[in-house]
Image (cartoon, rainbow, N blue to C red; front, side, top):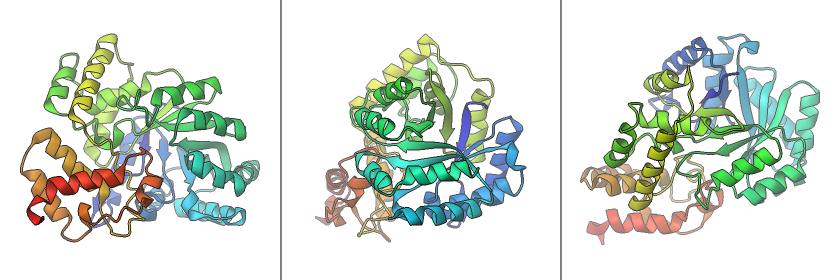
Length: 366
């Protein structure tokens, strides 16, 4: 199994729907290069991701030719008896008879309690015994101490998916390095998600790009993905690609993967210092926060405007913010209910940050 996979979370869209034609071309290119790992979840793109699996992958390739990961998400069940019907619906949506990996999704100290109370792991073990799951795992968003407790509580876990990238390696909120060390301690292979941090590490300020150019001519994304894949214990690095061009770029350096050199690691450290100096919002645009927002604020897009403003100091950010919020909630509409912060994998202080965004972009309305 090669060490690079396709995350089906940020697929190309056309008129509000998945662009199946372009997605199929991306799948074909990945498979043609000898890569065959695909990652989805029931809630990705409001259920459209699993449908894309069926239309673009499972209906077009023999089942044994690819590896498919899906997830059990806490928002879709409230009792043990609801898990199996949900799982069966996922198999049907994806057009497959089994999942190679089935992950307890977005595990944290809070959500893990629900999975244990609903006996989710025992249901997964039953499904594995029936041949409908090949391997049981978790995707994880919390501190390393919590991960250690979860791996202790649930010995059936075979693999762990963590957020791991150079911006989060020493971040006290994500604890990328510490989480990797816990996985190694328990002997669990690691699947990396968000190696490019939701695109943040592909769109660097010019100063950061210059630091990377001093040691190589690869794209910023290439440095980020190779960084994640360069550590011991990493089984797979998945990237949520949204265009054929992104797929082509990633395959150009992963088809013959080479770990980062010492000089490249040093350049990455310079980039990290630049990020810290700019005080950018570390949002990955996973959009978990938007579904439950009572004011329909497009939170990741608002944060993107703020980051662009900090990076480039241009009028474009104000214009984009105005257009963005014409038909949705504005940052100032936040009622501080806190629903967004409870589901944010990055543990961002979203309510405070929205206040900052309102102060920056809504000055004329005050």
